[in-house]
Amino acid sequence: MTSFILNERPVRTEERPGLTLLEFIRGVACLSGTKDACREGECGACTVLLGSRQSDGTMVYKACASCLTALGDADGCHVVTVEGLGGEPLTLVQRLIVEHSASQCGFCTPGIVLSLTGFALGSLSLSYDDALNALDGNICRCTGYASIRNAAKALCEALAGIDKAPGKRPGALISSGVVPAYFSEVPGRLAGLGAIPAPCGKNAVPVAGGTDLFVQKPEQLLESELCFLSKRRDLDYVREDKEFLRAGGAVTIEDFRNSPAVRRHFPALAADLLLHSSAILRNKATLAGNIVNASPIGDAAIILLALDARLMITGESGRKREVPLDKFFLGYKKTDLACGELVSEIAIPLPPAGARYNFEKVSNRTILDIAAVNSALLLTTATDGAVKDLRVSAGGVGPVAMLLPGLEKFCGRKPDAALFEDLAKAALAAAKPIDDIRGSAEYKKLLLGQLMRAHARTLAAVEAAS
Ligand SMILES: Cc1cc2nc3c(=O)[nH]c(=O)nc-3n(C[C@H](O)[C@H](O)[C@H](O)COP(=O)(O)OP(=O)(O)OC[C@H]3O[C@@H](n4cnc5c(N)ncnc54)[C@H](O)[C@@H]3O)c2cc1C
Ligand code: FES
Ligand code: FES
Image 1 (cartoon, rainbow, N blue to C red):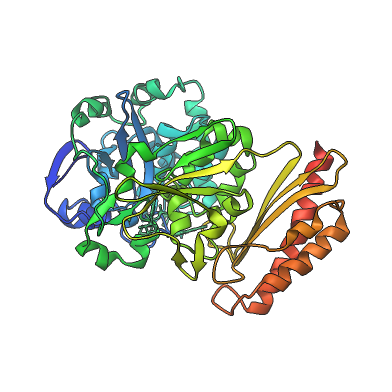
Image 2: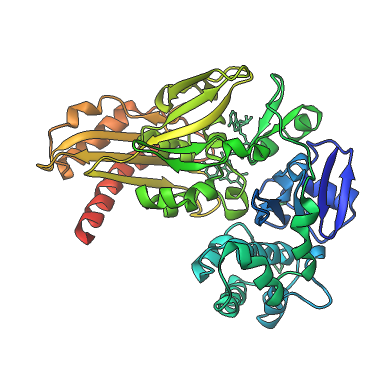
């Protein structure tokens, strides 16, 4: 049984938890405002809001692609489609879209309305940049993005004076006409709704964000026993101790990116992780899912390899073991994870003094595209400026996301142009790319060499600016 609130009405359904939320909304609940297009998280036409009640009674709403969200993930939540926002009268976001002529055929418009409403509910800064980031997964084929951006800008201006405190946000947005008044009753109505999360059974498929699983095997998931990690509050944290930044196994890319501890210790990640998919996917996709799917070009995996991350793996019995990320990938799509085991924590050593980090990604499109080749670097220097430690990862050039071997030989050298030329040679010697749809092996080798030079240029630019 899955229980949730769909717009204003309560839902209790025996539909299979692996049905996509999109199929439920359109096919079972007969709400056709949410559009069905790519079914692969690529267009944003199916965007809805998923609101979950926090332990302090406040709500957190996130825009997500309903085509890659399981019905079971909605258990205990508030699901908002365009029918749950307005019509008569229009909400502020809808009005601004009309006033700025930001809709033509209208196919993308419900998704854009939901993404902007999600921004208004969730953005800490309510800045124009944040509004544009919130829209990075919504494709429009006919209006032209200038008018959509104008509507987003007008929204930011209209919200400039509101109380930004997360606890006060829904009330402020009801007064501003961004969400309807019934939103204020939702936390009370959700109290006690939804099943109590249980540990995953041995044969259950762990579903984190589902952004990989629901592209790969949606039919199979319909028949499978599923374990929804988004319900596991014990796996949803980012905290730091003296040595490590620790992220639970259900932390989303977007929560990680926005976490104060990450901003403090790894400020560059706020921009780097924006290159991962789009907001409606990052709101659900997790760091652990990016690692366990064992893609040779996973962005988070490549970054975490350079940062020397370690995985805490917890078995069904509760037994824990630690595996360094660079020992986790055993071959193409093969990992050191046994049946029934979960990645329960990702621990990243806090950067030592003198450490410099950089990430580079080449893809056909800047946003919403998987890399052809990507690479991250962590360079630590001694007080005399000589290299003390160098870790460089490379994706798309072998069967697994790899850490370049043998870089100890660079220790003691100055990190100058000659060193990075030698690093490019070392990277090419280790790379074994294949021809595929992202490019020929030869092209990927060329890119890899260029990415080593790009690391050098970015580090030099950062140094010059500081
Ligand atoms: C349109 C689109 C764009 C994308 N763009 C990018 C991109 O730019 N960069 C990129 O790197 N990826 C991209 N991806 C791929 C995908 O979004 C990411 O790999 C994402 O991080 C996967 O995380 P998830 O939580 O959604 O994983 P899920 O789909 O939930 O799970 C993936 C696998 O990991 C397992 N799993 C998940 N969590 C755990 C855990 N804690 N313990 C054990 N097993 C677990 C699942 O059982 C499954 O086998 C894109 C995908 C789409 C659809
Ligand atoms: S239908 Fe295109 S993102 Fe879901
Ligand atoms: S208005 Fe036609 S696709 Fe955006």
